[in-house]
Image (cartoon, rainbow, N blue to C red; front, side, top):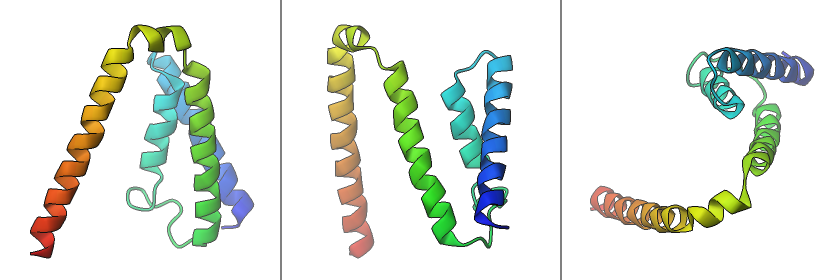
Length: 110
């Protein structure tokens, strides 16, 4: 499978995933995430055995587009209203993840 065929496969899957999510009245970004999980080499394996450079290149574009979509749905007024919740719980999540990761590393290295 060439890089162009791989790109077309991912685009077709993304369009179908978004169409299904829209029919179910779910956000489009959820469709992108679900399709990404389904066609990953660890699940359905549609890109298995492909040149990892092509897949990494597409993954970089995927991250950029994901950040773009999040930016489109970002609302500064809503963030201001939820600042304690977003920044407080976000900080707690980061600190808890760091603590659990460090504890897991200590357990595994011992």
